[in-house]
Image (cartoon, rainbow, N blue to C red):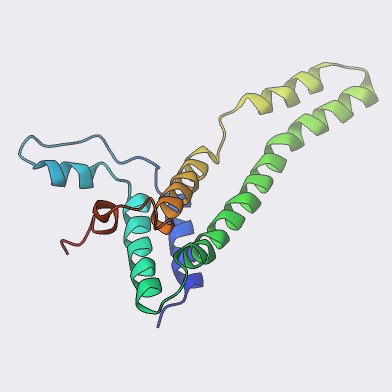
Length: 158
């Protein structure tokens, strides 16, 4: 028996370790359905499969879809927020250290070196993009009024 916590941890790890978009490699011999499946990243595919399983479970047990999906996605969003805070602190720390040394010595060079650390790329961009996509998929899947039959039966081929 698997809990939402275990599934959330798996999806959060997928968001952190895999890119938010799939590789653009497509062969000319694939069908349209296969090419759509290939454009999904690992995290998106896993999220769709898990959301489909959760909605089936919620429907079978007469539970609220939105609540079950929120319960599944909230730990992922919390983990991403904590990782964002840590990454921001690591990025700001050299700037604060440079500012302090500049004030103590009167030399602007440490301030400029610390500020240069702020111009680096965002290390959390991929994970944030993944989690944002998961949140969008979850809200679309959880809202029964707007979820169409095509959305619900998207992966019923397996």
